[in-house]
Length: 296
Image (cartoon, rainbow, N blue to C red; front, side, top):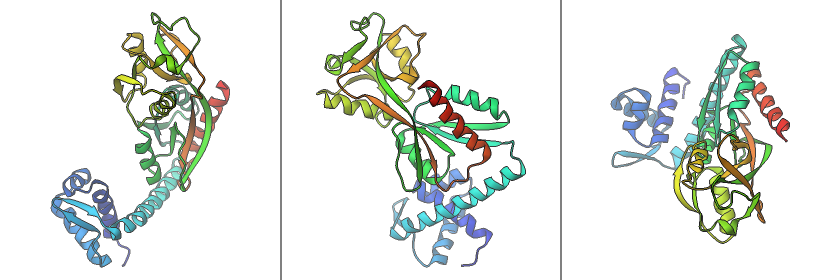
């Protein structure tokens, strides 16, 4: 096949359909008509000489040919985007956007404050994600860095552990355990808990730790904003497992250490091995490492 502008368009359209598995949704995300999208995919399949999708009603599902081609297409567009970013940094090194994903944002404000002082003209875009959502963006090369707990291993992923963070039990001041400095998990089996949803690192970690202690926590609230848990504990809605880095000393809350079980989360900085890292993004990595070294 000759390399033409149309083929780049074909690849972008193919990725959109492969990820949504629905022509209507893909067309909306690309801001094109369904007819135009369908014709472009058809031309791509004609050029390749194989069908890439199985048609199931209104849905399109990648077949074996499509799954194999998807990996190559993602890699090709990934390299083109890296080249574009590298040229942009060479022409204007003091401007740009740092793309970040986090599974917990408790330490991020302090880190971004330090980064903004060093790189005042660099913008940043942060997404709060579950571990699986974060891995997907990381493997696609769509983010510069992820600040993740738990750490993630992968062939294309660099993983640097930056902090070992103890998990604490947060209780309101009037709670029966508020005068204690530590507590065993078995003493919490009849408590009401507030927490984040399954899929977030601390929730998954502590569900497994509690299971090893012989019980499943009873959650009366499950959300996707970890920072909100402090307010819910303070309002006596329930108790919570809170990482030490997420403590709010100004709240009317007591923090207890956990006895008898290892309850720590590992915080890792992740990046794609092949993603181009600008001088500005390398500065961010340096600031993250220095931040956690300072709080050890």
